[in-house]
Image (cartoon, rainbow, N blue to C red; front, side):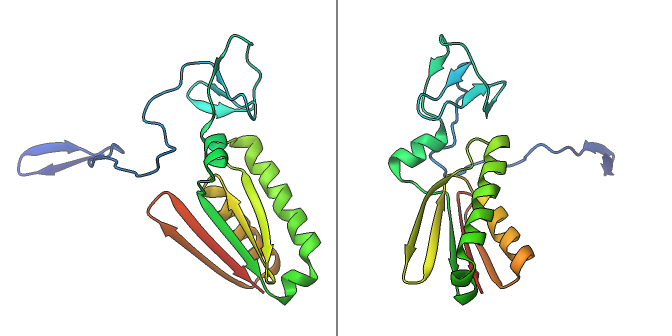
Length: 164
């Protein structure tokens, strides 16, 4: 798209005009050598992204960002689920969440559940990525309604709360 201003032609494109200063320490500023295989989970870095593909045994070995987050217990997101409806349907809801994780992780290996803690009638799910908590919250709200709150902390952390 072109626009004119005082005799000059400017081309607008999708390039960022500001310097991206994200503070996520697990987002690599360098490219991994290809192919790289994570020795913990088996994900492979191929063609610029992490995938669930087999690579040769001679592949470089390096922990993927998700496994590094798990090792360091450095969360990218949380989902807090509470309420009497949840308690009554816990098994069904947790099954749905596990299926969502499996589906998301197949396409995006860095989106995983780190741990699930239950305490005082609520369940806290910790994740390695910011997209999985959002998907879980949206799925809970679509399937069961309830009260959904989503808040982002910069671009590196998401907090989702669902209650019914």
